[in-house]
Image (cartoon, rainbow, N blue to C red; front, side, top):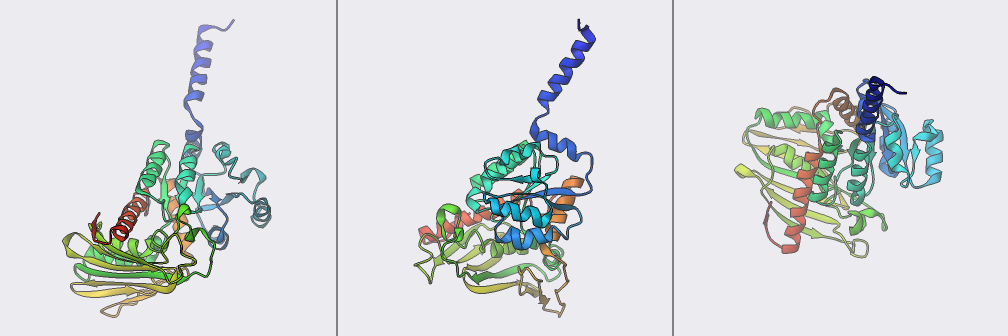
Length: 362
């Protein structure tokens, strides 16, 4: 017969087991202070294959632990190339079982924007920290749901704004904070490339396509971190030179932002032409970066002759290491979910301006 003490001990143990959900289980494991965090890439397209996976071979505080793909042949080739454990390879049907895998600490969502929210919510429910590529989502409401889910499950949510981790970009942000060149008056930011593809998610509205949410986030984010305030109004114009390809979404977007205090930003993004420039004009001088968002290095100068070309080994590796350290040390992320939400709030206003053909407030 079980005595009273044993019965209470067993009951307490059982109750504790119930209370400790799968979501919190991973967080408890993290408290044991891993030297490196295991990252699972969700979606094995170009960015994961050509940039993130190689970068994860250079990181100091995280490593490629697993992948999620709907293509069995990709799973097999990645397994061999990166010596991945069978139990760390998932497809979209069994993804939720990642909750039971202590090897995976972070899920990096690298999918079309229309499903960013879905996989962020599922990863958070599984107790995994989330890194989500930009654009964060298609709507502000989706962004809020992603933030809420991560807060509820006590995991961190970082958005893949790699430029905010880049040293030259960080320097011009500091220029603004310290008023080195005086008050920011005007920003000019342009980002674009010629995309020859004719059947890609970026050309499909249902998948979150259109240049504004993709390349448009670069000049938008640059305008915001250059001014240091949130825009209060926007006037936008969408266009395309290839209507047979860009049937559902815009190929090029021009948008002018107004900020509190009188600062303005003239921005442009395109899938039809190459652009990569950021110019910040202040009351006591100017500074510029050109290119300001290239993968292979940033270059620039100031009105008093300072070169802005501090080298960086790998932008994606720096971004992921910074975010991994923030998780391990429980410190603030450089670009948390709220940063992504602020951009998407403006993106939605840009589209309202296009539809209404007038200036709209944000």
